[in-house]
Image (cartoon, rainbow, N blue to C red; front, side, top):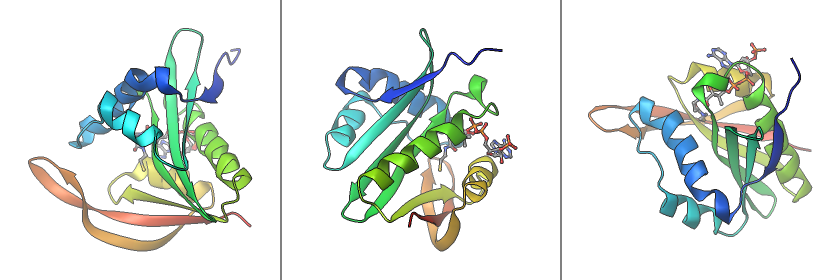
Length: 156
Ligand SMILES: CC(C)(COP(=O)(O)OP(=O)(O)OC[C@H]1O[C@@H](n2cnc3c(N)ncnc32)[C@H](O)[C@@H]1OP(=O)(O)O)[C@@H](O)C(=O)NCCC(=O)NCCS
């Protein structure tokens, strides 16, 4: 099948789309979905950049990262459920990594829920290693909180 997806920067006209992608991916975990206002504030923050993977008529996924001096952080990564396991997450992660490296970052950090086996497998296969653990980091409404693994990728 021909791959008709393409990557482009997330911009000010994409706030509703980005919020929808976030909600679709994280509300099922019991986490709070980000609003249009959250997205506006995030994408307007210093050093923050987003990438949208889409087709001509549908969004596939997004990645948002932040660069501060020679460190960077993957703030969020989300692929629509119907589009998963077809390489979109890996592609977005690679593009985000290329971006932060080009901006001068020497490390890329992220936090991933200890029970998120899909994301952990993706990050491990991309070369990230666990550098720490934050107890009860992810709040999930009525459900018990979940620890976060801090993972890091060396970009040198
Ligand atoms: C994590 C997520 C972004 C992966 O996106 P994706 O497009 O399905 O990932 P890919 O198809 O590129 O998969 C890349 C690799 O990740 C791993 N992986 C992805 N989904 C997996 C799953 N359900 N179970 C086990 N491994 C998985 C595999 O190693 C996979 O390689 P393979 O397909 O060659 O086996 C997606 O599941 C998602 O949006 N989840 C909800 C939001 C989320 O958890 N974001 C990360 C927060 S830190």
